[in-house]
Image 1 (tube, one colour):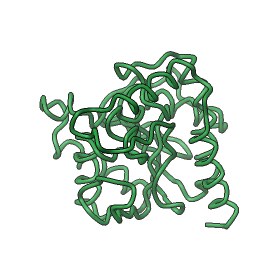
Image 2: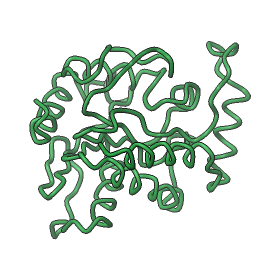
Image 3: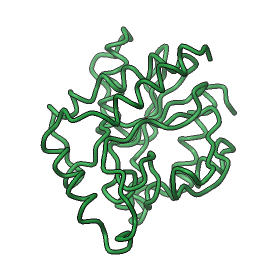
Length: 231
């Protein structure tokens, strides 16, 4: 990747971390960081928007929903420090694109190869619910991520909200979105210059109920990696 792309990602990370555009989300993320969960009462929470994480030369971009209140909002890194991350990084490790199967802290040595992780929203929302206005304010961050990640060949969206956000981002880049507009379905592949692959979100609500099993996610991830010519 050209230095300009790395510099763009670094600038984006700074801008994300400094964002205060959504008063409701600012108030919630900072309240959570002050009050904390008992298990983490001795830790200093990040309490800010969470930048993307991964390989600047990634050929696969994963797009999630938003940081977890006591996961990424605590640790400052995407899908780090909660059950969703445990499931996701274990799968990425099985696929050979993560250096370890766990993600506990920003300084735990985890390295991603050929994968970058972003989100539709960069702040932890109350009840995991975001308004349309909040998603719209965050959309430019995803646009800038896609522009900086010049090697990306495939987008993998985790959940319906991320799928819609990714479709919109691709449309803003000039991609022709099929008509009628595709509806989210696990395993769906939307063709195009940057194919979009859909998966159920790796939330504990899905993984602990069996709606999304490791085998199901491995199959979708394998498909996305193959389309990106990674595996």
